[in-house]
Amino acid sequence: MKKKDFTFILGLTLLMGIIWIVGEVVMGLWIPVVPVVHAIWLTAIVAVCVVISVWHAFKEDKSDPKISKYERKTQKSKKK
Image (cartoon, rainbow, N blue to C red; front, side, top):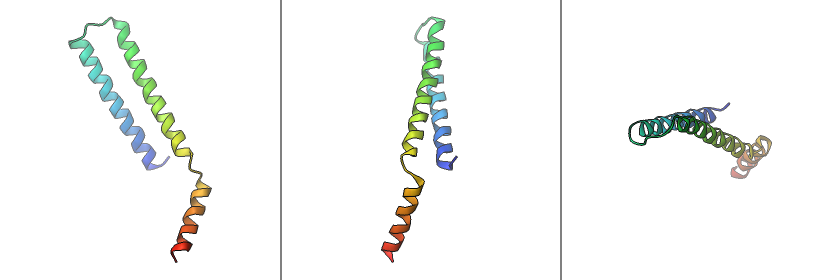
């Protein structure tokens, strides 16, 4: 795992955790809801986090390492 991937996952997890906590506080203080809504809210947050993480992984996989290595080598020879 690259450092960039780790920071993305850590940032995404922290962001979703903050959104979940804010939602729980809002539902606990201002919006009266039944207890089932809290479970649905947690499930939705986890699902969105997983979907974004998988999307990011597939987005990163589009670049083939062999092709990018070839492109870097050909760019170096063109610069000389």
